Image (cartoon, rainbow, N blue to C red; front, side):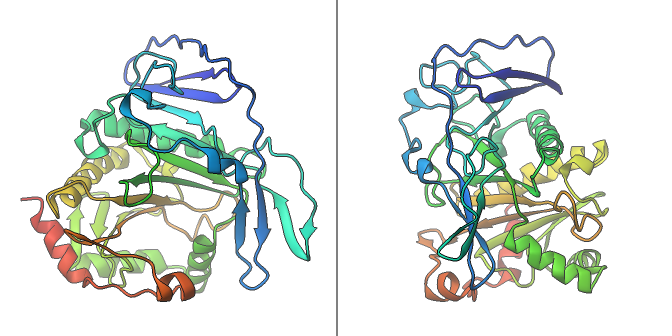
Length: 349
């Protein structure tokens, strides 16, 4: 992997990850005004959760035609000035968190407030607008993994960043605003509620992640297994399609993976995505997110793992988060986890 850094015309950073050396970045000729994000968090006094307020994101680009895609290389609307690239990462023009956001008063009507200081990045997996992660060559998937790991390490070093979340939203049903194959990275200025709950469970049972992995590998919901990784449908899956991909060794984040683990991850992850697309004979809408340990706490407790899930519960049906899930966070799954695991295994034939 060859990393090259540059700046866009408004000062945002762009980083190229190439499989061959020699890139000389093209200049961004757009003459954009400097980004002036306004991001803040407010703590819900009833639950303690932090809610992020970012009014400027309401004007972000929404499903443009292919000839105006900001992730295709070199075009007049492109965020990537170069005429081609392997993997490109740049600061989001419409961030949820940004270190440049101005200070805010410490409270509003008794509710705690804070700057939404952090960073949000866009990760472009390929310059091919019509591709997908599942269709990329293994060498490119491996480059994406190296980029994820490199960004995790770099963003974790930003003062005030508490946790780094690498994820991909795929499909209009999920709510994507750009069709080009890409993911995102959020560097949060706080530890997310989901992670706090997992840390509490792991603190009460330090062998939690190893125990879950051992039980799932012995059960009937394993989808894929290798020397370093296992993919399985969890026994208490919330979503109609839900798969966890977990390393056999305890590592806190992507940056801690060794070369052998990264090599196998590229193979198994692409295989898993292809199985997901084969379920209903069409590209599956999904969210694939990497749960990583926080930067400064619980790194011996929380094991890196991927959670991939889809809202599609049948070829022509979507699971909507209605009253029980949205209102009470009490999940109801219409699809038995054992059934979806068996179907994913069969989809690889």
